[in-house]
Length: 361
Ligand SMILES: Nc1ncnc2c1ncn2[C@@H]1O[C@H](COP(=O)(O)OP(=O)(O)OP(=O)(O)O)[C@@H](O)[C@H]1O
Ligand SMILES: [Mg+2]
Image 1 (tube, protein in one colour):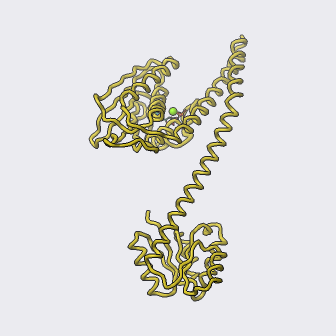
Image 2 (cartoon, rainbow, N blue to C red):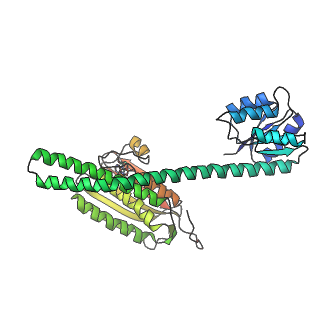
Image 3 (cartoon, rainbow, N blue to C red):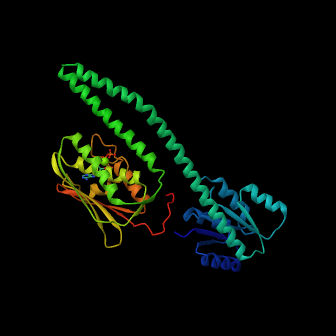
């Protein structure tokens, strides 16, 4: 989307020149001829930056600036004041009222455009930094809570198991079994939190897909054994797939989570097929199909949303995490499913460029 810049000046000629220059530079331009018009338009179509003349009829630039900076919803829009009055007091007044920058008339359009560009870049960086800081703080808090919950949870699980084994009363057995199920559910949530933390850092290097797929299949085989289900697991790997840039550990988490869903979609007996195949668009696909319960179109639409789950033991985060991992790898993930028939999840990854160096993603 183009950044939107508002130019405010009562001089038609100045305004036309300024607008033409900014449009040539790729900005969407909104114009206003005085402070009142500017304030009204800011509310309708909030700009990313405002260039504001000082001397204007009806409401001058300082008054408009003061009003913009006193309102919560417009306070953070950067404003560059344009003025012919070069007195030092004017500059001071502009900065006191909250202008981010100041350009003296007569100005060169080149200079205006350079300052607009640099201010917009700075603002984008500040916004990103604020978001990163917020995310980091939130992550730390979640991590702290997970840590505090883990130990008591282990104790509750251990004690419930002893109670279960030590009692002959069927009612008490049922109660303790319930406690154990809730404990498992919380443990799964904690595991997802750990995974989520892991995927925030990703270190890709050139790697082969087939060994990664085989490793995930091996893990899921163990998982299937624990469930007691009768599931035939087939692996069909293409010979010599091109290498891809990948974070092995993270991509394996993505595959495991998808495979785990397939196992859980099969009630007692079924089939899961895992393939790697070349695709027509030069990508390599990993396809995971199951003969499980399947989903309706409506259900498919929601599965990547966090906390979306149809399972008692589910955290609803497995696919949210997988989606994020695949996208961090520059790939795509697709889901096809039919209620009552089964589901196929396809991950498409781009082969590594021949000279591609490891980089952080
Ligand atoms: N292969 C599948 N077949 C049928 N339904 C599926 C399949 N994969 C995902 N789903 C549906 O999508 C939902 C979300 O999946 P997701 O893996 O994100 O969460 P979850 O499995 O419920 O919990 P967890 O975070 O513990 O993995 C599931 O609860 C299930 O309803
Ligand atoms: Mg899952």
